[in-house]
Amino acid sequence: MLTLLGPVLFGLALLAGPAQAESLYAWTQYVPGGLEARVITREAQCPHARIDKRATPMRIRAERTDAFPVLVCALTIPRGAKALEIAGEALPLPKARADHILVLGDTGCRVTRLINQSCNDPADWPFAAGAKTQAGTAPDVIVHVGDMFYREKPCRPLNEGCANTPNGDNWAAWESDFFAPGKPLLRAAPLILVRGNHEICQRGGKGWSRLLDPYPLVSTSGCLSAGAPFAVDLGGLTLVAMDVSAAVEGSWRENQLARFRAQFESLGKLAPEGPIWLAMHRPIRASAAAALGLMVGPNQLLARASASVMPDRVAAILSGHIHTFQALAFDDLPAQLVSGHSGAELHWTAPDDVKGLVMEGARVVAGTGRSGVHGFVTLTRDGADAEAWRVENRDFSGKRLDLCRMTRRKLSCEPA
Image 1: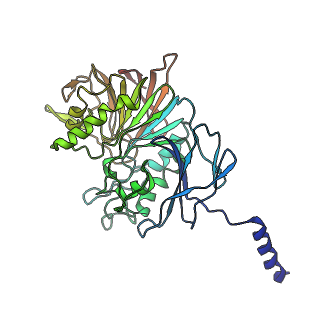
Image 2: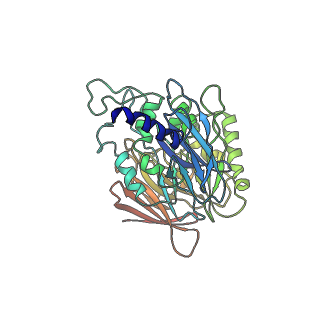
Image 3: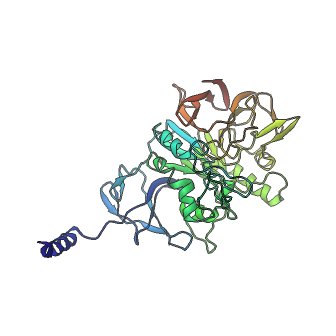
């Protein structure tokens, strides 16, 4: 019996055809011009894909390297596709109108020479548990406003909180920081991914460029420079993803000011009609600390670059960078929402009472903040007015902590 079993199994394998390549991680994300599926696999080839039940080959985006011993595959999804399967599993496709938007940011576990966040303690780094809660809100689209990569340096000796965690711009660190804990989000909804300052080339840029950057990987250095803004149609609302990862806080060069001014000027052409939201990692006006007349957080470069050229149709800006939740409204500027509290160590100094604060010449006329609590933000269309939204700040148990109502550039907020 045993002597016959081997040939029988071999014959069945031949009838079944070639083995299917297994995907470690698979998701869909918006890129300039539309939607793309991405896959990370350890196999020698990209997995099989089917669009509307039709076999469609994936292309290789990035080959293996010593630092990234995984294959990255990509596939352009045609507009109007109804179903997508990769390696036999269904992946999310866009809805015609996004009525429920999930916003998170600054999700990684910070390990530097000075700061060792306890990546091994879910109470100190709750992103994995939080990702399950966020996926459970059934979003139509997920916006990550940047800073996925934080494990830059080795954990200090004898520190059990982050013992044995990988570090450096390599696959082991990127998998630990983002892909493994964030896997529920990858299957929940299409992603809009924004580059943070932790994803610049000097930090986690090679991982970002290979794995997540919305632009094609064409680079001899392995790291892409900042991409141009691109627009995503969310149904009666255009969200523009803008790379401000290199927008320094403090001194800058005039060429940088000119570059960002040109990008703000381009928004009207990217979205010729209707309301616009920006998704950009660094907020223009927000506060990590405010005391004795000093303000830490606003970005002078972006404030000057956007002055007088920001289209009136820009109603809101979605950002992270400051590790807190804030919702801020000004007299004649877009509302600023900050969701930078989704995993990294928190900025406990961020003010909760924000009304009356002056940031780069603009006074906060309404809004709220909540420091010291990890969480995420959901935005849900609110009533008959297509430009009215309910903004909810939730902790990682799903409990609502703050509620704001946003219509165009106006906000009204209250504790939950």
